[in-house]
Every structure is written in structure tokens, then in C-alpha cells.
Image (cartoon, rainbow, N blue to C red; front, side):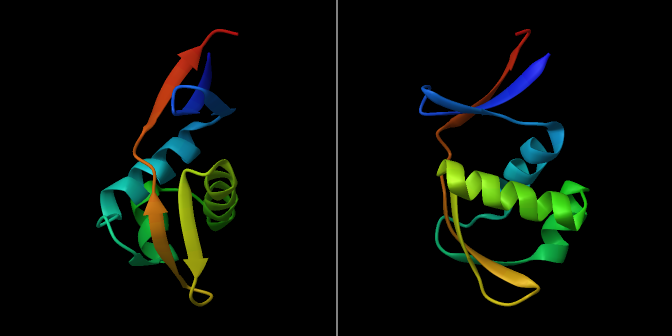
Length: 92
């Protein structure tokens, strides 16, 4: 099965379990306003590698699901998180 991240029930990208865990972690930590986060906190909670985290932050940002601003090498500001998304599975 293939997992997709669907935005606004129209646009979709292929997503693995790591991408899903990172999104769910960001959704849990997001306060509804710009939220400063440490990479280490997200890494620990999502249980992924640093490269995996950076890859999925870039992909989620490019897809328009999140908006981030790097503050330093160890922290970033989660400025916006779109909660109007779904994860679906497909056999094709």
C-alpha cells in the first residue's frame, strides 16, 4: 500500500511513516501561533534521523502544509501549520 498526504482533499504527495510522524509531532507541539521548537525535541518525539527530519520539514514546507523559519542551527520557528490534511492509503 502507498500512503499519501492529502491537502484540501485535492492535492496530494506520497508520504512514508516518518513524514506522518513528523507532521503529527509538529501538530502536537504547535500552539496556534508562531512556536519556537528545538530540532532535538522533534527528533526525540518523532523517533527519526536528523536528515529525515530536515527532508520532511522541507517537503511539508514546499507542499504548503507548514511554514517555518530557522532561528539557529538547533532551533526553528513553526509559524503556521495547516490542519486541513488527511492521510490516505492506496493500493495503486
